[in-house]
Amino acid sequence: MIKVGDILEQRGCSGGRKVLAIVDDLYALSQFRGFNIFCMWVTKTELETGYIVPKEKWSPTEGEEYWYVDFDGDIYKIDFLIASNSDKDKLNFNNCFPTREAAEVARDKIREVLKGE
Image (tube, rainbow, N blue to C red; front, top):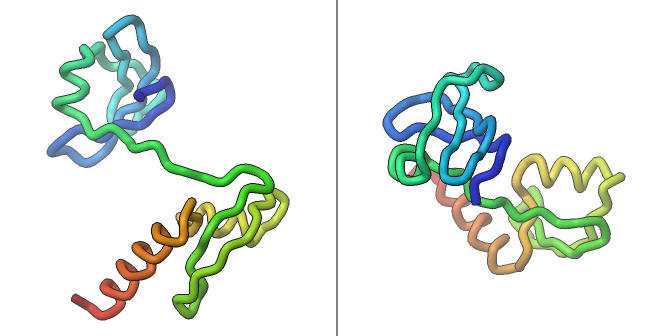
């Protein structure tokens, strides 16, 4: 679901627009990269066909278990602690997964990239 503050990428263009306001099925968008300057209103249909909408990203909450890929490719499960710099670093690097399977998929993608294929 699109919400105020989301950054949307316009198809075929580099750069993004910020959603500044939502009124019924109309969305107020900012200028490209001028995220606090209003540019135009678009309809929900125009938004869905002309822009790439960010997907909701999962992130653990305080005390919730998550899986991550270690530097050697091993997969571990630990509890998320917001005060932990290590946990915050993993979160910022997109290395927090809700399941072991999701972590394994990420690890396999990393291996493919590092192979140079």
